[in-house]
Length: 197
Image (tube, rainbow, N blue to C red; front, top):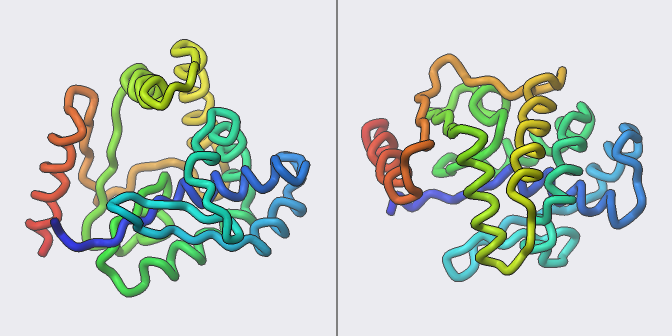
Protein backbone atom coordinates (compact mmCIF):
# COMPACT_ATOMS: atom_id res chain seq x y z
CA UNK A 1 0.00 0.00 0.00
CA UNK A 2 2.73 2.48 1.00
CA UNK A 3 5.65 0.42 -0.29
CA UNK A 4 7.48 0.52 3.04
CA UNK A 5 9.73 -2.23 4.37
CA UNK A 6 8.60 -3.73 7.69
CA UNK A 7 11.19 -4.35 10.40
CA UNK A 8 10.12 -6.15 13.59
CA UNK A 9 12.82 -5.23 16.11
CA UNK A 10 11.28 -7.59 18.66
CA UNK A 11 12.12 -10.50 16.35
CA UNK A 12 15.77 -9.53 16.72
CA UNK A 13 15.64 -9.78 20.54
CA UNK A 14 13.69 -13.02 20.29
CA UNK A 15 16.35 -14.42 17.96
CA UNK A 16 19.17 -13.63 20.39
CA UNK A 17 17.07 -15.13 23.20
CA UNK A 18 16.46 -18.31 21.19
CA UNK A 19 20.18 -18.64 20.50
CA UNK A 20 20.98 -18.11 24.19
CA UNK A 21 18.47 -20.80 25.21
CA UNK A 22 19.82 -23.23 22.62
CA UNK A 23 23.43 -22.63 23.70
CA UNK A 24 22.68 -22.78 27.41
CA UNK A 25 23.72 -19.17 28.03
CA UNK A 26 22.24 -17.86 31.28
CA UNK A 27 19.82 -14.98 30.82
CA UNK A 28 21.60 -13.29 33.75
CA UNK A 29 25.07 -13.51 32.12
CA UNK A 30 25.19 -10.03 30.60
CA UNK A 31 28.72 -10.24 29.15
CA UNK A 32 28.04 -13.61 27.53
CA UNK A 33 24.74 -12.38 26.10
CA UNK A 34 26.42 -9.27 24.68
CA UNK A 35 29.14 -11.39 23.06
CA UNK A 36 26.50 -13.78 21.72
CA UNK A 37 24.54 -10.87 20.16
CA UNK A 38 27.75 -9.57 18.58
CA UNK A 39 28.37 -12.84 16.75
CA UNK A 40 24.77 -13.40 15.68
CA UNK A 41 23.42 -12.73 12.20
CA UNK A 42 19.73 -11.91 11.99
CA UNK A 43 18.06 -11.39 8.63
CA UNK A 44 14.47 -10.20 8.24
CA UNK A 45 13.17 -11.07 4.77
CA UNK A 46 9.84 -10.45 3.09
CA UNK A 47 8.72 -13.70 1.45
CA UNK A 48 5.25 -14.38 0.02
CA UNK A 49 3.80 -11.33 1.76
CA UNK A 50 5.06 -12.29 5.22
CA UNK A 51 8.21 -11.55 7.18
CA UNK A 52 10.57 -14.49 7.70
CA UNK A 53 13.26 -14.36 10.39
CA UNK A 54 16.61 -16.06 9.82
CA UNK A 55 19.05 -16.68 12.66
CA UNK A 56 22.54 -17.49 11.39
CA UNK A 57 20.95 -18.71 8.16
CA UNK A 58 18.20 -20.82 9.77
CA UNK A 59 14.53 -19.88 9.39
CA UNK A 60 13.35 -19.41 12.99
CA UNK A 61 10.12 -17.52 12.22
CA UNK A 62 7.99 -20.01 14.18
CA UNK A 63 10.61 -20.95 16.78
CA UNK A 64 10.89 -17.38 18.14
CA UNK A 65 7.14 -17.06 18.77
CA UNK A 66 6.85 -19.47 21.70
CA UNK A 67 5.95 -18.16 25.19
CA UNK A 68 9.33 -19.41 26.50
CA UNK A 69 11.26 -17.38 23.92
CA UNK A 70 9.02 -14.33 24.48
CA UNK A 71 9.83 -14.31 28.19
CA UNK A 72 13.53 -14.91 27.53
CA UNK A 73 13.56 -12.06 24.99
CA UNK A 74 12.27 -9.55 27.52
CA UNK A 75 15.14 -10.56 29.85
CA UNK A 76 17.72 -10.34 27.06
CA UNK A 77 16.31 -6.93 26.05
CA UNK A 78 17.31 -5.33 29.37
CA UNK A 79 21.02 -6.07 28.76
CA UNK A 80 22.64 -2.76 27.67
CA UNK A 81 25.29 -4.47 25.53
CA UNK A 82 22.71 -6.50 23.63
CA UNK A 83 20.61 -3.39 23.06
CA UNK A 84 23.65 -1.51 21.74
CA UNK A 85 24.37 -4.25 19.18
CA UNK A 86 20.76 -4.57 18.04
CA UNK A 87 20.01 -0.83 17.98
CA UNK A 88 22.97 -0.41 15.60
CA UNK A 89 21.45 -3.12 13.37
CA UNK A 90 18.02 -1.48 13.50
CA UNK A 91 19.48 1.90 12.55
CA UNK A 92 21.36 0.28 9.67
CA UNK A 93 18.11 -1.34 8.48
CA UNK A 94 16.26 1.98 8.54
CA UNK A 95 18.94 4.44 7.47
CA UNK A 96 17.61 4.81 3.90
CA UNK A 97 14.04 5.50 5.06
CA UNK A 98 10.85 3.95 3.72
CA UNK A 99 10.68 1.67 6.76
CA UNK A 100 8.01 0.79 9.26
CA UNK A 101 9.77 -0.36 12.39
CA UNK A 102 8.06 -1.92 15.37
CA UNK A 103 9.55 -2.01 18.85
CA UNK A 104 9.31 -0.67 22.35
CA UNK A 105 12.01 2.00 21.99
CA UNK A 106 11.94 2.83 18.28
CA UNK A 107 10.49 6.35 18.56
CA UNK A 108 12.27 7.26 21.79
CA UNK A 109 15.78 5.82 21.19
CA UNK A 110 16.39 4.13 17.83
CA UNK A 111 14.84 6.80 15.59
CA UNK A 112 14.06 9.86 17.76
CA UNK A 113 13.84 12.00 14.59
CA UNK A 114 11.44 9.71 12.68
CA UNK A 115 8.85 11.49 10.53
CA UNK A 116 5.98 9.62 12.17
CA UNK A 117 5.93 7.90 15.53
CA UNK A 118 2.94 5.87 16.61
CA UNK A 119 2.62 4.62 20.17
CA UNK A 120 0.32 1.63 19.68
CA UNK A 121 -1.29 0.39 22.84
CA UNK A 122 -4.17 -1.74 24.11
CA UNK A 123 -5.29 -2.98 27.50
CA UNK A 124 -3.25 -5.91 28.86
CA UNK A 125 -6.40 -8.04 28.91
CA UNK A 126 -7.09 -7.46 25.21
CA UNK A 127 -3.42 -8.04 24.31
CA UNK A 128 -3.46 -11.33 26.25
CA UNK A 129 -6.66 -12.43 24.53
CA UNK A 130 -5.23 -11.57 21.09
CA UNK A 131 -2.04 -13.52 21.79
CA UNK A 132 -4.07 -16.45 23.14
CA UNK A 133 -6.25 -16.51 19.99
CA UNK A 134 -3.20 -16.32 17.77
CA UNK A 135 -1.73 -19.39 19.48
CA UNK A 136 -5.10 -21.19 19.39
CA UNK A 137 -5.25 -20.70 15.61
CA UNK A 138 -1.81 -22.29 15.31
CA UNK A 139 -2.90 -25.23 17.45
CA UNK A 140 -0.77 -24.20 20.45
CA UNK A 141 -2.30 -24.80 23.85
CA UNK A 142 -1.48 -21.85 26.10
CA UNK A 143 -3.25 -20.62 29.22
CA UNK A 144 -5.01 -17.24 28.94
CA UNK A 145 -4.48 -16.31 32.61
CA UNK A 146 -0.77 -17.18 32.38
CA UNK A 147 -0.48 -15.17 29.17
CA UNK A 148 -1.94 -12.12 30.94
CA UNK A 149 0.57 -12.56 33.81
CA UNK A 150 3.43 -12.73 31.30
CA UNK A 151 2.26 -9.53 29.59
CA UNK A 152 2.12 -7.66 32.91
CA UNK A 153 5.58 -9.02 33.82
CA UNK A 154 7.10 -8.06 30.48
CA UNK A 155 5.58 -4.56 30.55
CA UNK A 156 6.92 -3.98 34.06
CA UNK A 157 10.39 -5.23 33.10
CA UNK A 158 10.47 -3.07 29.96
CA UNK A 159 9.28 0.08 31.77
CA UNK A 160 11.81 -0.37 34.58
CA UNK A 161 14.93 -1.24 32.57
CA UNK A 162 17.66 1.39 32.78
CA UNK A 163 18.65 1.26 29.10
CA UNK A 164 15.95 2.28 26.60
CA UNK A 165 12.92 1.84 28.85
CA UNK A 166 9.45 1.55 27.39
CA UNK A 167 8.19 5.14 27.18
CA UNK A 168 6.06 7.06 24.73
CA UNK A 169 8.05 9.58 22.73
CA UNK A 170 6.63 13.07 23.40
CA UNK A 171 5.79 13.61 19.73
CA UNK A 172 4.25 10.18 19.16
CA UNK A 173 0.64 9.77 18.13
CA UNK A 174 -1.12 7.46 20.60
CA UNK A 175 -3.30 4.81 18.99
CA UNK A 176 -5.26 2.78 21.54
CA UNK A 177 -6.38 -0.35 19.72
CA UNK A 178 -8.32 -1.85 22.64
CA UNK A 179 -11.64 -1.45 20.83
CA UNK A 180 -10.28 -1.72 17.27
CA UNK A 181 -9.61 -4.68 15.03
CA UNK A 182 -6.42 -5.08 13.00
CA UNK A 183 -7.98 -3.67 9.83
CA UNK A 184 -9.16 -0.51 11.59
CA UNK A 185 -5.70 0.03 13.09
CA UNK A 186 -4.06 -0.49 9.69
CA UNK A 187 -6.40 2.03 8.03
CA UNK A 188 -5.67 4.62 10.74
CA UNK A 189 -1.90 4.11 10.50
CA UNK A 190 -1.99 4.41 6.69
CA UNK A 191 -4.02 7.62 6.99
CA UNK A 192 -1.49 9.06 9.48
CA UNK A 193 1.41 8.07 7.19
CA UNK A 194 -0.24 9.68 4.17
CA UNK A 195 -0.77 12.89 6.15
CA UNK A 196 2.98 12.97 6.87
CA UNK A 197 3.94 12.66 3.20
